[in-house]
Length: 523
Picture (cartoon, rainbow, N blue to C red):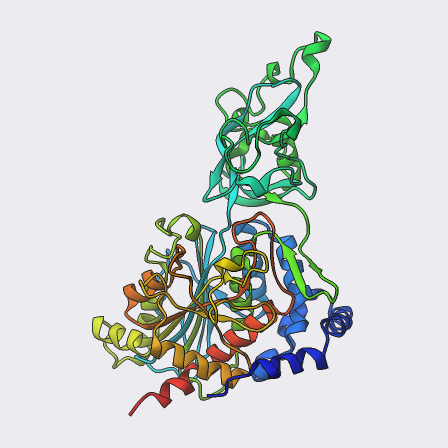
């Protein structure tokens, strides 16, 4: 195992500054139009160690800016998969006869979780899977089923509910926009469809109270009564005119549109091309910070963005799958699963505690076994498959903090722009153990990346990931891996500008080398 020393890392940074990296990536971006096309130009034919992390900074920032909600994220990944030749599978249909060695497939659930996998060309039933699992939901504030609020001193306000830790104090005085999915029925055919909506300017704000009034704004505020967004003005009452709320409801009495602010309904309907408001059956819309993701720092060594937790590890893992090799002698399944609802416990069907990942692997193995004819599918074959598999649970982790150093643990607080961190928790909140750490350190040596370590102090509270619940459900070897970030659960957070690319290098190294590394552990 090769371990890069601190001197090695300093030398690497001094020989190639972040500014020169940014210049190089700008040149690459000018040659690749659109930006996403860089993902399919031969990177699946090279080793992970040959990838340059700086090449992925700009594409990552563009992804973050353009896909603010979980639904947009799944839509983006579906488009990228289609470009790469992946075929969509339906959960409703049989998969028998549809899968084959060398094939590439994906399946979604609820429009908010997605699993994509590539079957090795030399795959045989019972072979394992190299799996990466993460989540793509983020802290937010979602519109209530009835989001219309009574007029208040001329302000039009919006009824929202916190998702996980949304509406915390970092949400005050931010430029917020609205996006999500809208359920629409075609009046002619009766067919129901889902359309994605995203307003491209800030329309909402949660105003703070000036300090002159003596009321603190440091987290002690009532999120139901004091964190209500304003989305417009209506001063018709002082002119003697009828307020907008007295107008006939859009879509007719009893319609969904009638329960929402009329101007917002018109904006969303215009954005998705709907003229008959009564055809809007429902929606799941949320607030999001509208400021673009961007690089910062003197040498552009940072990325400042919203929703880094966790559209950082998930993007890096997904792009690693698109970049993964497809050699003739590969016999494993390479898979990435990205879940919804991790921030609220993963308990729903699209969450990691549901059966989405285990049942998808089982159905894939069932279909591939059926092709063999003489291979019996059942618990024995699945037990063999999972025993030969490895799961990388991928979620952001805490970087060493410059101002609250009392929270850092010496030797266990990762730095930005160095590499992923293997996350360990003595109480089992993480799934990493000595075997899985040794395996992933070997992967890092093959990928040309650096593995850091993360562990919390004994006087701190640990978070959790999807790793323990998935590894226990499938019984496979597993480890928790995270890309470091600052300001976790803030509406805007910070990571290193090289970290998306460093994560991609590591995850590609894992997908490409798991089969080789696994053989080193066999007698």
